[in-house]
Image 1: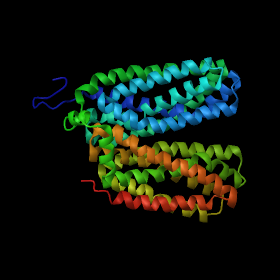
Image 2: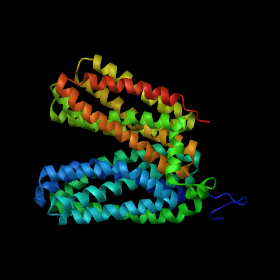
Image 3: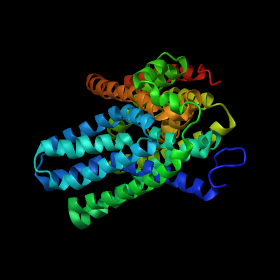
Image 4: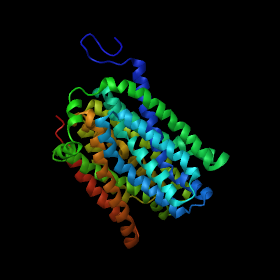
Length: 406
């Protein structure tokens, strides 16, 4: 039987499993690639549209904010429709934004095309939505290991899309970049349509009907009253805190030790590579042990890494020690956290609850970015900022270890 066995259990062919995983990887790669290349896109926009760099930066800020805000709303829509519906909608928004950006001549136009469309589009294609779509088709156990591969594909997308976009910019400027990104996103749209044809046959049987009838706010409130969800969400706050330090302060910190921009860039390249490897390792470890031990240990290793680095002489090997371990244990928290949410609350609610947890992540990023500027300006160094992160990571590890995975 194509979609089932004699006992009525739905199955997928091996070739379909491969396609589903490839689609998940491709969607995550394109989504992450777009977001990490906002800097490149911004410089091209500012150089060709006549819209000042400050206004372009404001549009990017809107996109970053809406990326987080859109995720719980996208998860709520996925409960009412399907995750594939949301992925298709997200790709449509990205295509619309890419096509409109070269036509923008005023800041308010760019706020809509880049800020609104790209922000909401990337939020609708977030990792939680992707995993919520593919998990029922792959099966819970297989999805646990594959989640690390799909998450790691985000790093590959960022690494590949950067030279791709730069080459398009050199060849044809802003229009060429936007046409290239439109073409890639159109592939996402087509792939999501195929995914929809499969997903509708694999809607979670246990709670799909009740979830569709239950008010979204009630589901979120129920999760927030749950010890397991609250522990994971608060731990995710720490993840956001660390990510913001890395994204906003680490480059300048490396330069402050007297290293060159090329050396700092190389350190970030190494960090990016480790950021691909770490989630894959975490995903496969979740097959061998409880997810809470994997995610808790990822958090527990952070204070050890930070303290070791702060005590080391600031040599180039010390810098690379730091970025290697930050990369390995940074995004590695995402697959086990997602797997735990799916295991505890069902894959049908995964998009909504992972999006809700991401709000905590973005809150941590906001606090870190705001506090980082104050602490670095007042102390002239980064020690207190990292020590606060170490303390938060210790608390996060304890919270994750105490989650009742049964």
